[in-house]
Length: 150
Image (tube, rainbow, N blue to C red; front, top):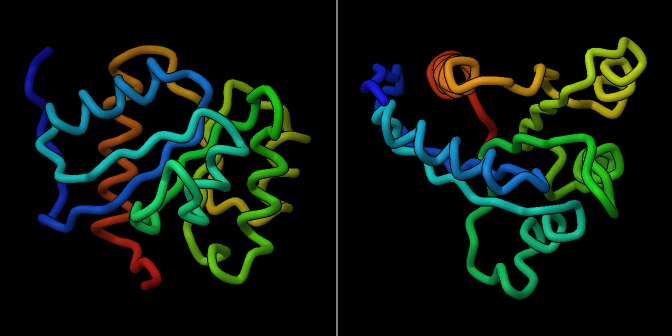
């Protein structure tokens, strides 16, 4: 894989990826390294694990509060829709930017996600180049343009 230029100004962030597809998260981690981006990528394989991570319940004691959450909607068990609702109604977590990424381009899915206060909705990348572009653009916007809450 060729080395791709990232745009980060040096600020590392803690990124929580909530997705039942572990290969997707491994790919994100690999791309972050190849882009030279200093972000730490944490993984929760489902909705229940994500909530345990956020509340630092076992086995997630001592994990940092994520700066950004990437959330897949379609997961078994507690799905992304419910996780989004719980995050955005919890006073401790509602200010964390949540970027929904999904294979669905249905207007009703997109509207529902924004209705639950998702900060962005993006199509789930289908190939490596799209994954690279997604992470590069997330880095560019969320860490170089937007000002994140403490």
